[in-house]
Length: 314
Length: 314
Image (cartoon, rainbow over all chains, first blue to last red):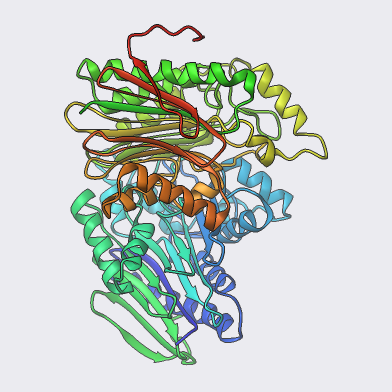
């Protein structure tokens, strides 16, 4: 059944005019990641490639297209985790980086640490020869419009966030049975400067263990943190639940205990995958056996041969 | 059996000349936290008070006495968690704050976020009226000596760190059965600027849930993160293990899976407590039924009436 890769483009409500773009983007990312697996590449290479494609796509709240902080800046979080060794790398509140997921991978591979934050992460990026990009290049007109709207006295950024979470993530199992995950986000709309959400927090915004599986969550970051959602779902799987059952149990627990909504993509070591959410929508896609599966609303599972060219892709 | 409070002053190896100071400090902190519980105060008030006492004590790697970064600065991490609601607050890589644990509590109580990092955390502190302190006031001669030593080409900061972890933490159950935890640290010796360890990462550096218990870990931060140690131990307790069994299982798993050593203080909802470690030493103290328990080496559990005045306290 191996290899397999599943991606999400964020849980929440996708406005109608953006639904098709959002679905096309996750299919693109799944194709890109799966191509690596198909060629014998590693799960880590595949999830980083898939998330890089989504960071580069301005339709998502990660990399270019990130939401803005209260003061109008882009501060991004990302994580990767390697299920072979439990090695992980993350960056939080990093500025001026086109692909935070790639910087997170460098933290894992080139330092003895698991997470670098803010200016320290930028300093490391410079030492690694990663060119900083102008903040303007990461900001879309749509992000700026929503930021302005949420500066109004009667604005409700948390409510508005439900309109477009847009965190992106991927999980994969490669042909050798190695498992990895990656997640990347611009965070919460109009967040305070320095706010760190679930994404760079291991066990919350992602977890991967070759013995159990991998999870990449999206949704209300603070709720995901309170229940350590990724690790929680894997604990259910350790207790014998399927990827889908465990995902549903974890999301139900988060809703009941802390009133949080969200979604996840999950894989297990056999290559069984699940894309589950209790928000209104979650753009997701999964690639396996040369078939591409995808959906946006609950219950949807469309499929097509993976080679089929994308009509609505950007 | 309620109330109860248990504290630690870091796992690792305490040099002989610092052993008595280290033990006296955790007894002081346990007394201070327990006095709050004894007077009907909340578990949250008690753990914050205990950790504040330890941050103010230069014998520990938290607040004053923190280790230095590679460039010679103090960057601190802290977390608190309230087991009633799973509310939590944390700060990471924060500078010039005398009591990061109190700032973490303000993040929990005064923002919609769970974690603020670096300059964003400082901005929030200023908005809260918390006066920044000069960095020099946080740096001890001992910290500077160890920093210099670890700048040598043949230095091994990770090895040296085992000589004095010194992260501090507390867990408590109050007379109403509410559970809380708090952890604070200066992090890893000669760490990279911006390095974030386990402490501010929910589920790693602390977790509290009224239904299960609370854990505050100390030890090799990156290893604690890879196994999400606090949450892992609470999962074992959910599966019916005692606080002590669960702590030992969690620590054994961390050693076996990622070769990490450390220690924890744990409480369960009935007020059963445990202080366990697989490092050479961990300074710990616990207060319950007007008795003070404490120890430094494995197997030690000294006790005395809680009123007994401290002879070696600073």
